[in-house]
Length: 199
Image (tube, rainbow, N blue to C red; front, side, top):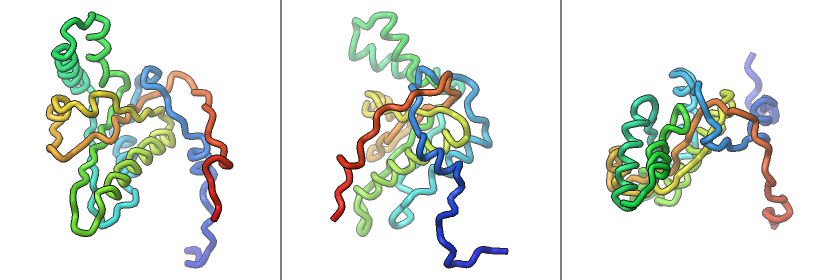
């Protein structure tokens, strides 16, 4: 029997609250195989898309980077880095080449915010950020570790072109997803007294 429409909304499953209370990032260097299978990843992306979206614009999209694509993109990253740093050491080159290989799956969340007659661009950008956070939460709920990373490869036009981004599109995050090698200790969080003002 369906619950009455005026039923209180305090029946949130404890597992969801636990996920929200304990969410933490796992460094990309501590993410390893296995990553999510196709079904789990599809569920994560569906969850990521369920965010506030004024005007139903879907001002974001997702690029899934896994398998050999990580190596191909890594070669592009290395070439761009060496072009700017011709004296790069072998160690530096290897680090740049491995940026997309640190986790089994990397999801590039692309913000495609643009001028709109009714919807402020800022709200579209915030919606992309919400998609990133939902993806992080979905990964943890599925039992994986995740890390929201940008780094220089989120802003370099050569890398964006290699990913097929349009001129107005931007990388909101590279969300690295994999199996956490160990449970991360929590870090200090802001005291509510420092960040909450009641008026």
